[in-house]
Length: 611
Image 1 (cartoon, rainbow, N blue to C red):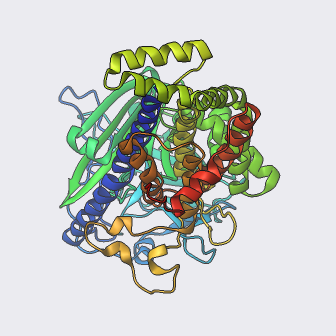
Image 2 (tube, rainbow, N blue to C red):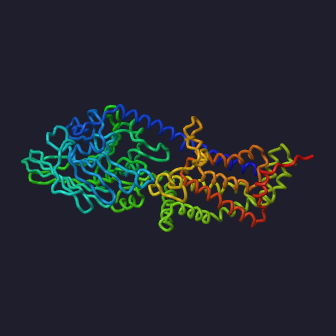
Image 3 (cartoon, rainbow, N blue to C red):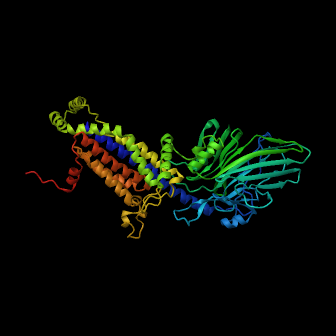
């Protein structure tokens, strides 16, 4: 039964790592490379828009003349691509300036289309450019939010469009506590006013008003949309969602990757208590309508020349404005970083429907999010996320110590009866049935659980994947340093054995076929050594095949985990070290011989042939 235990452990670990690496690292990396090449080809073939040209279709009603259409569908392919500065200069603007955001609002179209997250940088270098989230039309990658009014089919009421040039009432930048007001008169008895405010983080609040100075009532429909042109480069990992997202009433969380929506074209929802938008790994732009409002929401895609376009939008119920009256509609926009505390606070303050799912906690939500909260709390105490991970690992070991104690105690008993087990194998020879029956009687007599050795591994697996998820998706881990050469726990160890840790100036990862294996940092090597020591704590399996698997497993893990986030590798190395100490302590208390040094010595000392 010891053979069975070792076989189970070997198969479970090897299968999990090999399959996990293939799905989470190998295939996504290749997919991401292909998508990046495709995106570059699309950008070269596409002709970005001339400044001043609209990128949305005029509102269109349904055949019955009742249901309006949200604007936003591009109709013509633009001519030349502009730099960001040139595109911004093509429209008069109102500046945005807060401690978290910098950018501007285009008076032409009234769009929020220029936004930088000034607290975050492209790289670990604090002098690198900030993260630009939203970009105006005319650039190579437009990404913007738009709000306004549309009409039902057959109506000839003139409403603001992407060509409309608004006028700012007063002057000054949009800042916290300093809203701005935009106005536009359609010349036919309607005056449109838009008041925009921003908080100290990432939420814009908009109030659209229509003053009816004419002699007849008008019926208009408020809408909001987020549009993105061009398929963005994504991380390409199956454990992370990037694309269109929303929690839409009773229909719950809705996630569509760019490829998914390309296949679907349009997905419609008729719900209340919803929010929707477009998310990247660490950043997002989402529409946050009133939680009591009934939404006709939509995810959709289209084309602009050869360039893909993606849009999330909603349409509210009609507002009828009588002569001499004023109609109003409220809207909110989240455009910023997916910081856990900030997202949680918005969910509570605005009473949003599961807004915390904007962060992709995954299927192990019930483990992943609490694990992050503990790590984040410890970080606030010790000031280093890497140290916080080490402390959490120690706490997990302490919590599961009773289970591990029973497991290792059972293993100690099994080692004590090894001579009897070998005698049974010799006695029954090839009669496996009788051999197994005799072994089971022995286990029952000695009160041994033959699968006890699986328990420490079984406990470790969900924690491993949850920590991997935390390191991969949470913004707080991005660019979080440890010590020494680890400046970003969410990225692989930057050192490489195959360049002699920087002495050789070449990139071995470009080698065809095997290049992705030729990045092996110092921490993965440390992890491999600790895993090897853990394996050597137990006697070698009597079966040569199993012994070979166990001997090669640390090598396989070392190469596989080399491309994983450094924080995860550090966790694994520390966990192995604690496991070796814990196992040696518990087994010695139960009288089992600690064979670590004997097994290590046996690797380097060749046995003398018997004469």
